[in-house]
Image (cartoon, rainbow, N blue to C red):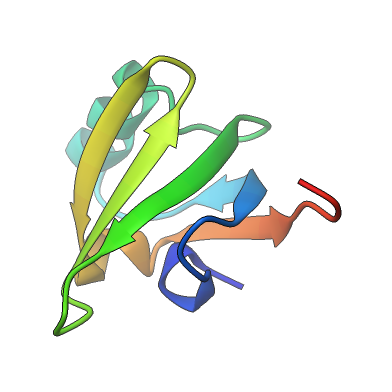
Length: 77
């Protein structure tokens, strides 16, 4: 499952982040890395942009980047 498969308001743990080194590094600085807990706050109407929160930071991910963030959905949160 990736961020693209998450539903608005759901929470998950990041299992793996794929993509170019620069993109993975940028996501790491924003708190999106293996083992981090994230929440999907908003999804654009065309499902091309995903707003996620990791810790105290928020990041808007394009669909191509969001498809490279593999997650495990948390139950009960």
